[in-house]
Length: 83
Image 1: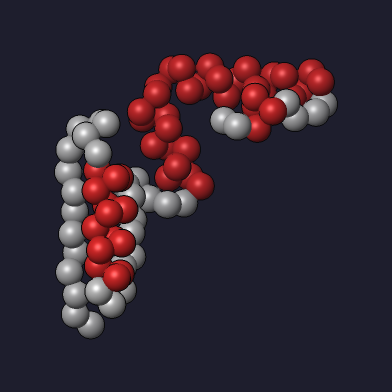
Image 2: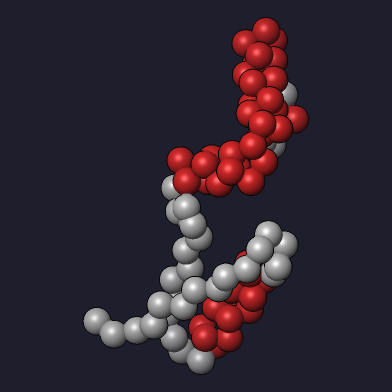
């Protein structure tokens, strides 16, 4: 198996996702197979960990608030479902 592993580095908001999307499109148009990944990973756990790392205590408060609301109301609120 041969290929390239390309990484894009930069701070939050630097445009890494935008550049990755543009590069993937450019490579795909030229017939290359593209597999995009994102740290800490594309799993449900990885996505939750990323949110926690990026937003810290604010994310935890929002999660606790939604859990409390769901228990109290026994229904899902749109604001909780979006988080």
